[in-house]
Image (cartoon, rainbow, N blue to C red; front, side, top):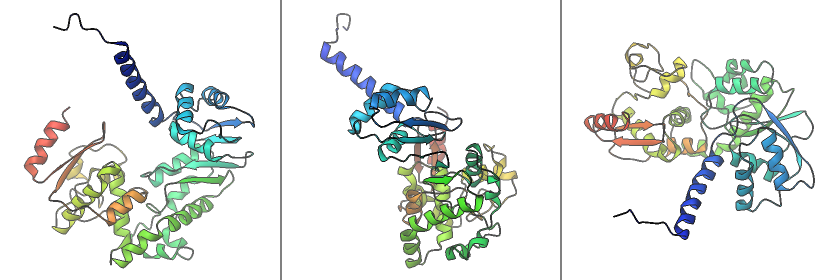
Amino acid sequence: MFRNFRFTKPQVGLILLALFSFYLAWQITRPQFILGQKEVAVAKGDNFFTIAGKLESAGVIKSRLAFMVSTIYRGSFATLKAGQYVFEPGLNLHQILSRIEKGEAVFGSDEVVVTVPEGLTLAALAGRLNGLGFKSVDSVVKIKAGSLADKFSWLGSVRSKHNTLEGFLFPDTYRFSKDATVDEIAIKMLNRFESKTADIRAAAAAAGRDFYEVLIMASILEKEVPPKDMPLAAGVLWQRLAIGMALQADATLVYDLGRVIKRSDTTELDSPYNTYKYQGLPPTPISNPGLAALSAALYPQKSNYLYYLSRYSDKVTVFSETLEEHNLAKARYLSN
C-alpha cells in the first residue's frame, strides 16, 4: 500500500522545519556548560555573528547557529550590548542571550555575576560561590538567622532550633564584588528576599498564616514537582497535614541525607526531615524557593487528590485520589 508513496517537496520541507525547531528548542533550554566561569569581551561594533563566534570559541555556547537564530527570532540581533561578560555554569542559551541583550556586563575584573536558580540549597549555593572564587563561603551555611534579625525584623520569627538562612536567600541574578565577604553576600540576598516577597509575606499575615510554614512548604514544592504542578501538589500536601497524614515527601529525606534515598530510609532514618516517619512539616526549609513556589504554597489548588508521583525524566506529575490509584500509577509510570 505504501510502496509507491513519496513525500512531496513541501512535505519534506515541513518535516525538516519541525526537526530543526525541536533541535533549536533543545539547544535553547539545555545548560550550555557545567564547569568553571567563562569571560567574553563584546566590543563596540561586534555584530551578532561575531558575538556568536566569540561565545562558541570560549565554550559559553554549544551552537553558534542556535544563538544566531535565537537573536533573529527575538529581534535583538542589532541591539546586543558591548561589555565584559562573565558567565557561570548551568546557564542555558536563553539566559546567556538575555544577559547580553540587557547589557548585564561586568566591567573590569572586580565583579562577578552569579545566577541563583529556584530550589538551590544553602550547601549548593556555597559550593557554587566557592567554584566562582569567593573565599570562606562555606561559612554561609553556618550564619544564624537570629544574628541578622536586627537588620531584618522578619528573621526574628524563625523559630527553628537550627536557626538557618535556608529558604531566605532569594533565587535571582546578583552582582558581587570578587572581594565580597560571606556576610555581604548574605545581606545582599536577604535584601532581595525582603523586596521580592513583601507582597506574599503581607498576604500571609492578612490571612493569619505562618509565613515560615509557607516558606517550608514552598521549598518542598521546588524539589518535588515542576512549577505548573505546584498549586495542585501544595493542595495535596496541605490536605495531608490537615487530616493528620504524613507528608511522605522524598525531597525532605534527600535534603537530610544528601543522596538519592532508598526505600529502607523511609522507615529507618530517625530524623525530623523523615516525613514518612514523622507527621508535620520538617523543621526548616529544604531549599531556597522562588515566587512561583511561594505563591503555590500560599494559594494551593483544592482537589480530592491525596497522592502524587513525579517522573523527573520528562517532568510528568500524576495525581491520584486513592492509594490503590497511586500504586497503579507507580506501576505504570515509574516502571518505564
